[in-house]
Image (cartoon, rainbow over the protein chains, first blue to last red):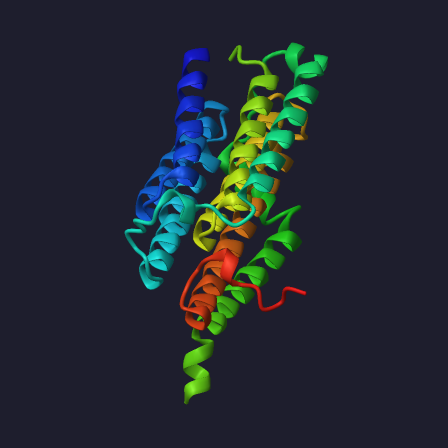
Length: 168
Length: 103
């Protein structure tokens, strides 16, 4: 069990690092898919099988394909610029901030006695229970989410088509 | 499962820092969105790890994770539409060139 965790952790970390450091945008998205797969593996390892399936369906099936389409609709598909042009103007502030955040979180988690000594848990939630709760106790957030997704869909189409509508 | 909770917290803190670095220091707007997705996933992994170690009432963490994933999907759809609109206006997706609102 422990070796599985370390293999999956290596996959996710390598995928995330490659996704933000590679120069070719299509390679970046492929590394991001590797990262999403690693996270789905973590969900399966933790016993959240429904969320593992949802992760693959939504992130790899929808978000990654959406990002690929956005790359194809904008220019510089191969992106063979020099190393200077990949980074933004004040890239050192971003790197410094992320290093400080990582150090702070690491220091806080390392001192936490409860997290280190917590007994193995293995909580269980079956898919049938998730379905029952989703249309029972959680029906109002569920419907609000449906409205939000519809609004986001309409908004995305309106924003992307703005110029075409103005031309007519 | 004998992996302590702190391993998961460490992993997701590290992933969050990687995503933050990508979102703050890259020039391409699409990579910035990808960094935001990495940060989202790190947060949700934290939630599921807490659920596994029974620090949540059973179905609540899964519900939170499902709603967070839906919101992330909606956010990325709107964000990429914005990137396409910005590209149409500036003919580029460089963050450094979007400074019409700069004071």
